[in-house]
Length: 193
Image (cartoon, rainbow, N blue to C red; front, side, top):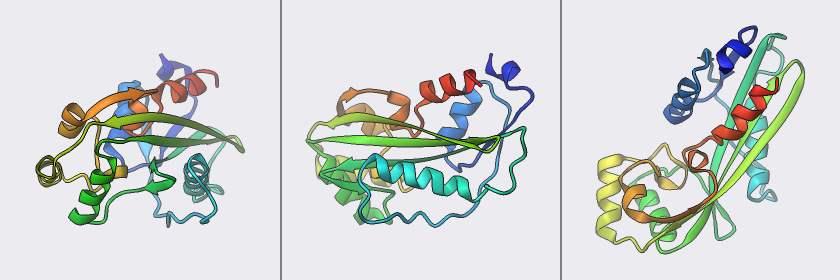
C-alpha cells in the first residue's frame, strides 16, 4: 500500500539494525540502506526521551547536505531507561550480565525516537513502552547471553528472543517499539505524506 503511495520518493534507512530493516521489508517498502558512522554521544543533562530524540536527530545530520527533494531519510535510536539511567548496548559479557540483573524482577521503559527528514523538514516521532521482567536466575541470564549474544541490543536483550519469551511478564505499549521501531507511528506518518 505505501509502496505505491511513496513511489516518487527514495526512502533511505540509515540503520544497521537487522530488526529495523526487516520492519521496512514487512511494510513492503522499497528502501536503501545508507549508514554513516556517528559518535553517539549526548549531553549529560538529557534524560529519557530527550536522549533518543537527540541521537536520532544527530544521526540524521550526517546526511543533511546531501539529500535531494525526492529522498526521505529515516534515522532512529533506542534506549532502555531504568532507574533514571540509560542502558545502551553492552560492551561485553559482564556488562550484559549486570544490565540483565538490574532488569530482573523490575519494570523498565524502552524508548525509541525516529527522525524523518524530507524536503528540508525534520520530524521526530517517539514512543515509550513499559516492559516488566520476572525474577531471572544467574543461570538463565548466562544461558541467554552465551547463546544469543545480545551485544547489538539496548539493555542487552531482544524481546523477540528466548529471554523475551521466558522472562517478560508484562508489556504496556508497542511491542515492535521494544524491537527498535514504533512501526505503527512510522507507517501513519509516511502514509500522510
